[in-house]
Image (tube, rainbow, N blue to C red; front, side, top):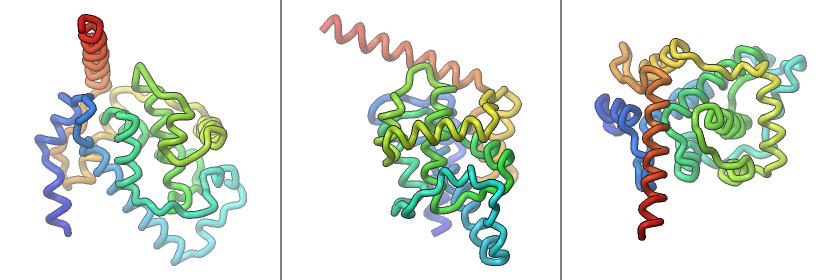
Length: 226
């Protein structure tokens, strides 16, 4: 199993995904999604061990507001499949998932009693990815579209977005150094000692957005000429 998963991750491919990522409809799923899914899965497994060793660890009445992400029934979908679904229908670039990871970490730091588990992870992911997409991308889908992709109602996602912003203290800005540090952490998730360059600066994301805009303009011109 370990060998099979390692085959999916290539240093050169991971680096190329971000620096020269294609936003075409048939573009492959960015490898950063697999890395983020692995990290979230390990976090959930660790939290489950904590819950078993100390049953009171997850009982934090003072942090009841963060339970807004809890769902009544645990979704029957793996983190990997859920992230792939989000990418398939939104085409959010690799940098969006890095920024979403920053937001998840900030949310957890601002709410110490919150623990990522099977009941809240899907809602947390779709909300942070949507907010990160608004921060990184020039053009975005409406909340109603993200809600359908994530399996929620528009009202639910709107509410989750507002709660996330307030519980984070509206700390959405991600500078270059912060972005690089979280990229490095994701790189270490893949290989001890690093070596995988997901993305080095937000300038790369800006370059990608510029190419995306140029491609859209080119396609629009081509349709007009046809």
